Length: 222
Image (cartoon, rainbow, N blue to C red):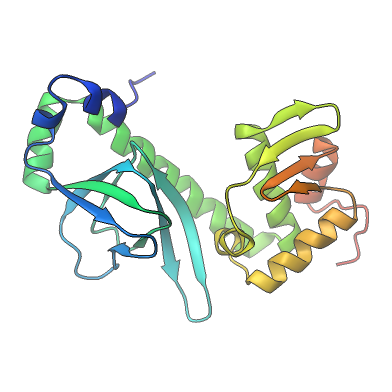
């Protein structure tokens, strides 16, 4: 497998600050825009610390495509909006500077390829969900993704921690906050998901939830 670019390895190395010479550092407060989607500089930024949301705005709602965290890179001129969801530090370089850095640290290319691959996968998933899946299927798919990546097997099922508000989940699955909240509560009432506390859920039967994500729900009355 290709080596994964890790920003922490660069920052902790003796030549860390030298490596970022030519990059511009900027702190973005929560809620501020890193990219506006129009007229942004032609360059690449690296997330040093914090979290950013990459999203699009339609006539009626926003759709979140994916999130960027420490070590991720993204291009400024993607046409997407990029918002800091918490205090975030980024380092920005114009295209010429970035090309020079690629020569000294080729593994950076793998970091950019990886995030672009995530972006494409997320966009395709969003399009598929909006075209073919109802709101409950999309929520079920959201929790299955978390179960596969961060889930822990417990006596009561698979426990997952969700670091997103209902509004953020709604933006990720292309729905309104109210509709998402109603559908999530319905899945909880039907026993597909159990809420354990703020941001903590248990999936009693992952196979059953996967069936719901495929449209084979027990209630089947939508």
